[in-house]
Image (tube, rainbow, N blue to C red; front, side, top):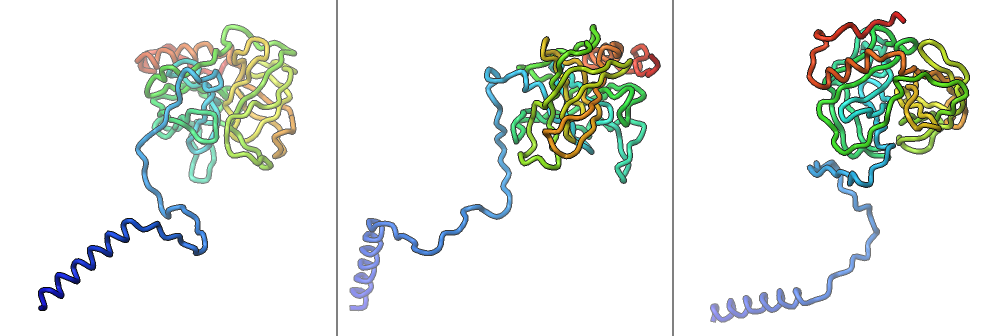
Length: 277
């Protein structure tokens, strides 16, 4: 008799489970709660954009080290920026008269709110001045690998900037009153007001983080200068007197960067760091 009761109980459980499997899902009538999961989970997949959709603005990159700046991919493995962007700093943030170690510099790719890739640096090619802007505020970063398929912009290294030439600066900067997250922005520019031996002056809107970004000619679309410093008031729509490092006065620097990218040692090259013009 006990065995019959046991078999009957097992049959009843099986029938109940079968009925539950066929029943409709239970609807929870409680309060809705956010569906985010606490903590972080690593995702190994890195998305890459289709290169056929890339535009020439993808040549403008963000530089991340002790400070954040902007740069321009001028060949598949060379990035043009401002010297003060890659100068070493002490624990108080004061600029030292030497460059950051290349391994401490990261180049972020992509102009939208989030980068879609990054690359490291293996050499910094710079003058022996310009660590805090001013004369010599130009540097060329040799990348650890070639960026195949990414657009590049042409630097104007064989002709001077022209007075009254219209330029547009680009940068990843963000002013105090900016509402958008960090992303690439073409800034309100203006005409070149004056050309000095090492820089030119134009009225433009510049934000912190734009340093090192390109000033592009509205006529030829080439890069005529590098953003160095500007009069800023925290509003990205306010234009002020802005200073841009000239490129055409540093032919030795560009030549040395190309040789180092090709495998040469800096010690094998003729002097290229002199600031005497």
